View 1 (cartoon, helix red, strand yellow):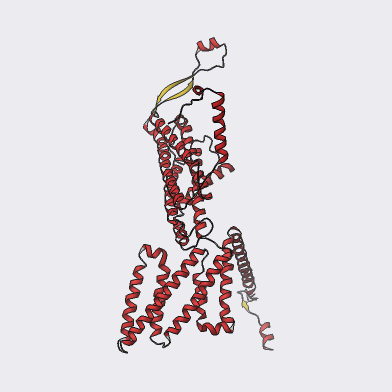
View 2: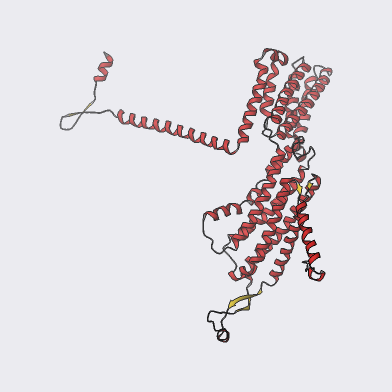
Length: 504
């Protein structure tokens, strides 16, 4: 009855003329607004989930290695979890089976080298810290009950301080940083727990065995199921950077001397190639990380156990120096101050020839790196590049006072030829100002500097070919084709007519 009465209650207000009006509640509008807000929130949340799933799907399609790595980690954790699920295995390792699970979670990485490096670091750090912890605990135990905590505290302070300081050394940090961190953690646990636990050796043995089980499962799964080698990734990265560098150099020079710079689909593709040098500029950290992981990997494919991975870092540094030069060339293309057209025509062919020969050298280096065979054309390509450099230097000397070809018809020649359309071409000497010459001279000097940097890359790849023992190339077809014309010329022609001038 009370509820029915409350529903029948209504509010009224008296107006000035004595008439009362009923007040309508505003809950209807508020309720409608709240319902709309709920729908919006639910719809937006579902939309965000759909977008997230779409991004995850695209990532899996673009980089399937990450999906494979996730499946491998799940398999490793499932195998280690059997030590908890199966009673005989649990009784064998005891309650320390959790250390095997922790080892898998912490140690398993995407590449074989990273996993091996972390496993070895964890094993060495745990063994050294456990051995020192047991030794220090033995010394503290025989020192008496009063001195035992003092000895443990001083040893913990000294070893933790020294180990932490060693992490700042570049050579140790690059390869053993994780091992030192595990050393500090294990020694601290052994020192603290050993003060209260009587069966210290049994505890250390169980933990070492469970860590060894987890590390061995990680290594086996990482090497047997779709292995991802850091050495292969580093090798492929250097090859890609060389190839992108060649395309960027060609496109920069072509774009500089292009007359009609309109935005088309082809221009967009060329601009992407022209900016490929940026990948080489941003790959230093990745190269160092992969080279560090590759040192831990065993022999696989074309790479031996002691493969010269440090040489890849030298080649990568040389590639970045060349990429910085190409970045400056890219700035010349987009510069507002440009050289006059007649000056560009004077050096266009020579600059194009130098850029083409330089990119050919980079392409030959890419092929040699991919096939791991010594290139038979690299010396010839470098010679062409150096010859183009000399031509450009001579052209720069004659740039201030160069000849301009113009069409200047004269009446005498028109009457003699009887054709009104003939226009004899004459050349006049034109002097250019310094500000007109400066943009083009900058481009030419950058091309010459870039050729010198490419030679450094060539020397680095040649050194890698010697250290890694690249296979020599045997071109039997080429040697036969070279011998046949010599025989024909020697049989059908005189020795005097066969002589040809040689370029120096």
